[in-house]
Image (cartoon, helix red, strand yellow):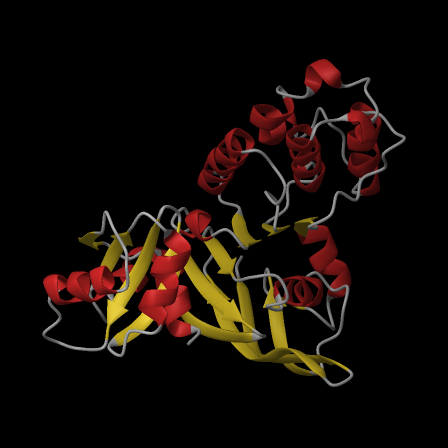
Length: 300
């Protein structure tokens, strides 16, 4: 029970949110849609969850067509939108009971599916949802999306605004859900989360740039990548951007990620140039590319 998207396009007036998007998510796969805000991720999720019509193209979710079989799809999927959308004036338990009732089930009937998640918030079952922390809201929303035992789970930027510990716990939960046979499509702007997916689609301005496993995408980075550091990062970036042989220059934590346009690049020549620009304590070392480097290269 996977997902198949074929040539989906969607516009809002003059703005083209999606441009001929096609991809397939295999049954039981954890598939990531990776891209910045405004890339078209939420629009695509709304089309696949039958909340929005595409202008052109077709899509099937759990073998059902998103237009002709929308009722069947809504009974077969779990959807966790980017913004917390549960009833904030209801308690944790009341929210979960409400969503279970909508789908004709009970908390007890599918408790084993949500147990690993729900036990963490069960001590707060009488607390109103609006009073929960970000991480707790996230766990409640996921529990509500799972309570009817969906075949496909849609998670639209589920870890945005959540602390690092809760983000790590959330992805561990997704891995456990995947082992239970649930197909998962998750979108995120965080490139480090991409490595946790089976396969990913990199999306920018409504266009799919590349689809593959995280490892394959990184291994196909076309150039040697260097970490560069100096006493003044702002001055370093300016100097690298004016260097005639630069190919790409991107800030990356405490370093600048640099690629050179020449095949015979020599670190000492670049170091000498940077020293002439008044920089001190210069460090240049070869490094391994990340998903973020791959995305920036494809987006050029």
